[in-house]
Length: 359
Image 1 (cartoon, rainbow, N blue to C red):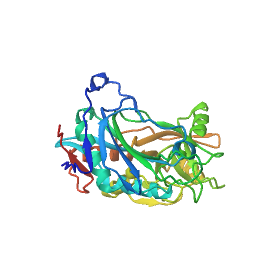
Image 2: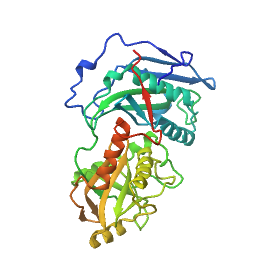
Image 3: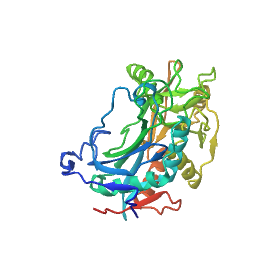
Image 4: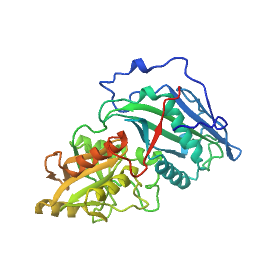
């Protein structure tokens, strides 16, 4: 349960709650933000005590370094209604990934106590914002950015770390149509593809819009080679069921180390599936499709959990995947993960951190 270090975090509650403004029957992803946020500043080589206060605007001078040179990193996590209260999923794993991203972007690490206790205290304070409907959750957004006000290109010496939350529905309510991208790539070797930094997502907007204009929902990113090796799906990791085996591209410096990806791979072995982490080319998908071996394709990520594909576009040809049904791996593993998060199934992996409402 939450144990708050008052030397690390101080709390000033919002004078009034905005929760009455929420339409719980029509959440819309990213529409609502909870009452409070956490903020902590880094200067003089150390983190200052964090504060939880009413959610509000941040005042930034136009010369703030992050606005010009992209020294900014974020995470995405979730809290869930649980049979024993509220659970936060895999705090330690998300903190580990945050540290990796910060290192790649030449930013100072966030101490685990600040990250973990800050999230738990914030979720505890805004526990009423955790939705109850199936498929819903409280999204948690920690992020950090450079705050030096010199506009020369250099690593910042000061930073701000912020966490806010908001209730969200299922990210993709229906199966996706995805297009194998041939012209643009998400990340290059030696670049920032394995870091969860803002520039990776900003650079993906234009190709994604072009794909949508062509009738697709998302793109399947490749490595840019003639082999068209698949790397990710939109802002998600990607997996395929090929001939009864679960296949996913191996982690590299161009692929994000997804926490949901890791969780699904663990559960796949529990479910008896053979797992292969290896390169998967678009041409292999075409060949498997014609042999009847392409059984499933789906994105995997915090927001969506699993997002099944109904169609994959490859070089102007559409591969129509089998109709989604309850027996499919992507549906079953999503249900199993939901059961663990909600307490309907025992959490033998120690993934849940339980939080009581303290206020």
